[in-house]
Structures are given as C-alpha cells and as structure tokens.
Length: 298
Length: 312
Image (cartoon, rainbow over all chains, first blue to last red; front, side, top):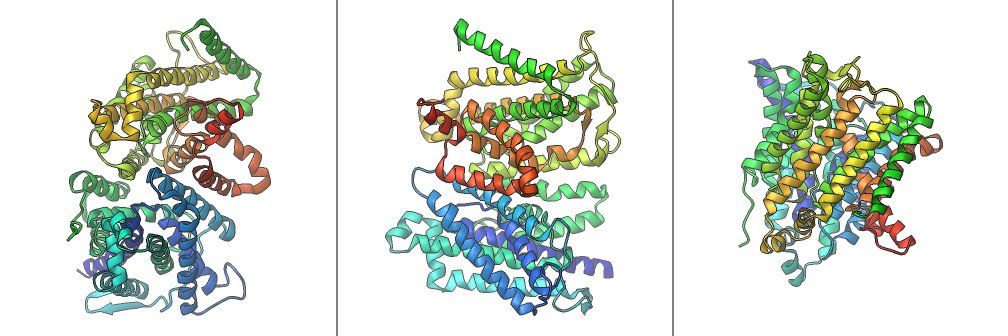
C-alpha cells in the first residue's frame, strides 16, 4: 500500500507539471486561437535559467538564492513571450492570413529556442538543486521528495490565482471576452494587442515556472521541451481547451494513467510510452470538448 | 507538359540526374541518394500541406511503415520481393485511409496533433516490436533482392531513386492540374465555399491524405535499400519538422518550391556545419520565421519574381 501512496504523490506531481504546461497553452490559445508548440521550449528555458542562477555549472561564481532564480525565470520568460508575440505573431494575426501562419512561425521559434539552449548550455543534462534539499517528506501515508510537494503546492496555488483572475477581475473578463469573440471584444473597447501580448507573456511565465519546478527531478536538458509540449497539449485536450480547471484535471488524469498504467497493467513497459498518444487520439476523436466543456457565451 | 517538348524536358532531366549517379564517389553517392529521397518526400508532403492544406505530422511515419513493411515482409518473412513491395504499399494505403477517415475531420492544427500522436505510436510500436522490428536497433544486414532476375546495384540503384522522384513529380503534377487538384486547393482556401460548389470536402481530404501518405510509403521503401538499414529515429519527429521547413522555405504549394526547398535545406548543413557547427539549426529556424513573415511564397516565389513570371 505504501507503494500506492508514493505513486499517487509522484503522479500528482507530474500531473501538476503537465497542468502548468497545459495552462501555458490555454492562456495563449483562448484569446488568440494560436496553438503555441514552443511552450515546451519555454519550459526548458525556465529550467536552464534556474540552473544558471542556482549553480556554478553554467556560469561560474554565480550561486544565487532560489527567489532570484524564480524572479529571473519570470522576468526573462515574460520578456521572451512578449517579444515572440510582437516579432512573430502580431504581424500574422490579421484578416486574410490563415491562423496556421503564426502556428508554423512558432514552430520555427521552437527550433530557434531549442538550438540556442544547446549552444548556450551544451547538450548534456545539467542537474538542478531543489530549494528544500533532497530530503523525503511524509504527510500521513503520502510520502515523496520535498520537490514533489513543492510542485503540487505551487501549482494548486497558481491555478487558484488564475481561476480567480478569470472569474473575478475585469482583466480576466476582458480575456474571456476576447476568447469568445475577438471582433465584438474589440468593438467593446478591449485592447486586443495588449490582451494578446499579455497572454503570450503570461503563458511563457507559466511554462518557465513549470520547467524550473520540474528540473530538480529530471535535470535541465535541451531535449526536454518537445515531450513536455506533447504531454501538456494532451492534458489540455483531455481536460477541455476552454477552461482553466480543465487544464489541471487533464494534467492529473494523464499522469495517473501514465504512471499507474506503467506500474499495474500487464503490458511491456516500452509500450506504456504510447499511453499519452492513445489518450490524445481518443479524446480528439471521441470527446473533442474534453472532460470539462467550454463555457458558452452568456 | 503534354507536347513533345515537355517529354524531351522530362527525359533530359532524368538522363542528367542519372548520369550524375555514375560520376559520384562513395560518399557523394550516399549524399545524393538521400537528397533524392528527401526530394521525393518533400514533393508528396507539399501536395498534402501546400496544395491540400493539411498540416499532418505523419509523413515520416508512413515512410517508416513502408520501409519496415518491405524489409520485414521480404527479409524476415521471406516473401518474394515484388509481393513484399506490393503488400507494403497496400499496407501504407490502407493504414493512411484508416487514419484519414477520422483525422481529416479535425480542423487546422488539431490534425497536426492527432497525426503527431499517430506517428509517435508507430515509433513506439517499431521500437518495441521485439524480434520482428529489431527494437531500437532496427534491422540491418539485408540486400535488395533481384527483381525479375535483375540485380540492381551501385549507381543503378541511384537511377531507381531518380525515377522515383520523376514518378512522384509526374503523378502529383497530373493530380494538381486535374479536377481533384483544383478541389484540393478549393478545400484548402475555403471549405464552405468548396462544399457549396459541389466539392466533396471530406472525400477530397481523405483522398489527398491517403494518396500522399502512400507516396511517402513508396519513398520509405526506396530508403530501406539506401543504407540497407532501417531504425526508428529516422522516422521520428525531428525529420518531420525538417520536411515542413523545406516546404515553407521552398514555397508551399509549388512543386518547384518543394524541390528547391528540399535540396537547399538538405545541402545547407554541409556548407554551414564547418562554419557554425550545430548552430545551423538555429539558422533554419530563423529562415522559417523570416520566410513566413516576409516571403510567404518562399524561394519559389522569389525565383518566380526574379525570372519575371509566376510559378504555379
């Protein structure tokens, strides 16, 4: 049984990471209809910024405190997200240009980000120190690494904040209005440019945070982005692309299926790698609105 | 392309491309052969992405199904080569049709993600196929058997690849100028208007996907005998990105663009790598972003403007 509870902690922590990446997609997808596959690379960027600030591995003589790493990730990723929006997305979101143009452009950005990380930090995985050390923590029967509990705590708090933002603030309502009808929202005096730029900056910050949080468990590696991008998107599709709480639910469902399936189902371990893809295909075809249906205009 | 002149042009191009095969050394032959495979894949992918407007990430998966299919059937099971070839092609076509039926209903980038999931599944299956697929190491140590009593070796196999490219181009150009080609473009530009004009949108999408994926399978079969090795990484995600970039940079929707883009991006690393090392991939990314932003018709559009006429 102890095994089961530990697996539950581990699956919840992974699910939270997927949920954060799904949230990064969602923040950008809702107001712009752009599926930004580069969020995985943004997470990798966050992980590497963490390593650079916290350890002397990347740049010697810099062993900064954790709050500095967090601040650096949020500031740098926010700026990068905003920059990417201004340079490559803004010129392409207008009538007469297919929505696939900015999406393809962001695939180009994905490669630019990934290869730049390789050039800056090398191709070897870099370990990242957890802020609360490597000790084990137990809450009743639920035991795990301190980092796993940190991931769960931060993710749940962030989702609560984002949920409140969308439900309770004027800015959140403006976001939602743009998501429901861009044109009508613009006519109502909502600044589309500002909402779009803010969406990209916020999406990049959330993705960077996901990378920073997961890096002590997986190391920072230049190939970490693409699998994360696929898992995050799968989580988004499972939960439903319309709602913030859907991203969280989708992430948790995906991680539970992955980890419990790999442990308890009587199939070769290699084939369990296919689970997320089976889930993605199943949801796209059978339940494209996801577990939590999007809200109708009201 | 119907007159005697165009037949001569085709023959001349095939003869020149084939003659080249007999003049190249070992390493250059390898580079040339792989370039021809890339061109063949780029041509069919251009029809799917550029002309039919479907962003699918499954092209290399079908190349993999073709390659693994023919190698397993001919060398593991021991069927006669012609039969293995026909079965591998059929397998690609049937599988593509099955994938296309539900997938092509998905809008825009959701098709990309469904096909991405499909191709990752194919990769999982061939990596975990045990004895049959050789696992992550793949299958090696086989040779192209004699076909109807003829052993095709050395530069003659390069000629086969030249003919593969010519056949792919010929088929796709015929399709492009046919009613079906116009239906594909209409569905790409405005599915509602196309449907109103009486075009069967779903049928057109499924047919375009199945045809081009089968052509990818054919290129995959040809690839299986270039190195006489098949292994999983070749058919993974990295290459589908490169293929997509070739089409974008070359000019999507244009056959010339697909050829120019494939040749350009395939050969560029040989020039760039000594200068910038692995940084050449950054250069590719920048090239793609700049193309989409400033030159959406790609190199083909650029060439067309320079020569003062529009390329189709």
